[in-house]
Length: 624
Ligand code: PEP
Ligand code: MG
Image (cartoon, rainbow, N blue to C red; front, top):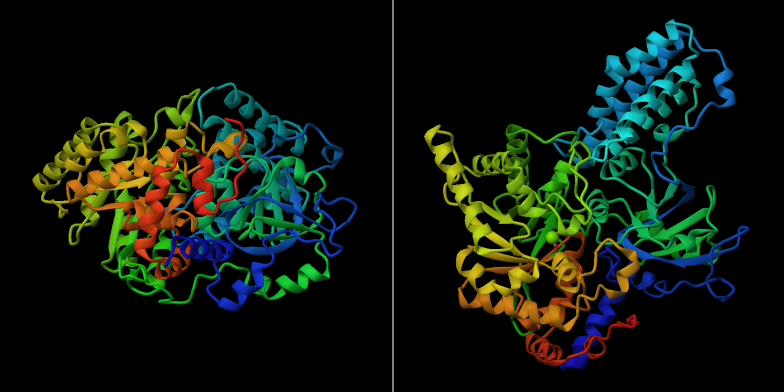
């Protein structure tokens, strides 16, 4: 196969890349819908006055859904001051009823989440329930009501009092506490007035949320509230919120706020999150073309055992395809799919949706469940990668001016050793009867890797002394996601048992482009010559020391980049479960020899433009 053929194969498959549907007919159906089309052939523009139009956004999490828009400034606004409804007379008995109803609803949400994601530690609403039970909160409301204050006024006064105390704190975590308080107060007021459709009380079934701001726990609420999908109007597509949306299977598109101006609450939307297209007031032609896709809701995984157990190029070059997951539900999906294993288990995802740091035993249960789901296949457990844009709501961290360059990854772990040690003990215990691979995020030096190894060895000694069954020979790996790690890749390869390139962070740090900042998204260019050459250097280091190397992050699932990555020498790709099938198809149609030729040219090209041309990528570069 020639280089040109290889490029064409990658390109034609990339047309359908965002479709997670295995079925060939459906893929054909979506192919011509990648460019927004209006029934009258006019140019797309933001929808106003019921006119049909299409908005092009960025796909974040797959799915094709339809619903009416609910435009929300923030899911958790602060409480408005007094309203006419405050004049309504309610009694202490009404207040008690509202508290009881609120508690029942929160329990129900908790239950829906447990069923939805099968995560043993997903009890995010426990913190809401605790607030609801708190004598300083609802107790104080009760006292004021008994003293003659109107029920609505008591709810607002007490809530605002706590919110103003918490909002004066500059520590992270407190603003989320304020959101929780406001959520609960809004729910209490809604239940008091028997309103079924206010704030968190809303059932978003049949609706698509349009919002500029989301927290990880919002995602769980949205899941529980059964929203069809989300349109996020700020934030980059590689933010962890998007990883969570993919894990939770909530279709999501990022769209510029100015494009969404014509969309108001009640506007009918058809969202093709596979391609990032939002059809506003879709007409019959669009509906007809999407009809069958909508029925499937675009969320199904390819059928059981849909992928072949091993992946080779046409000329017999073996590539390992592993899954990147963060939740237990994804582990079972990965097994059903028939994937070789899990190349990246983002352990922090469970922490982000919990309501407090899980205990050693809770983590043990969780990791054991992931292991059992995977039935003996390889799993790479990445230790907590907190910090940056991944701060659990319950954690009070000091605010950092530049979080991505701040206390993240292993720096966070070393600053909070008790968390790290707890996790290591839980992992070692959970793997007492099977092999264990542990991966450390954001490794910046050999010293850092050695320190991590020493901590693991200390935990092994402790468990041994206490006669606790454990794994005593875990394989320890380093993530290569910083320019400094690339610079010492050879030393890290000598020291580590295996390496994993984290392409999201590698691109962010090498190019100095914040992966969550939409303003600089055009500068986020993974095929930059410096990135390709850095990957090549890591491949050579791993080969030199005969250490396994894989690549994860968005590059690994980008069909336009896979040929060049394979040509550079990457032999293991870690991709979200839903993308494995399509990546496998591409690789099966590639020739490794042609990929090598492509990589040779790309590695020699000095400009972004030349590499874009080589890889058939359309990109208008900002003048940089
Ligand atoms: C990466 O940086 O590519 C990676 C896989 O880690 P995360 O996206 O979780 O930072
Ligand atoms: Mg990373």
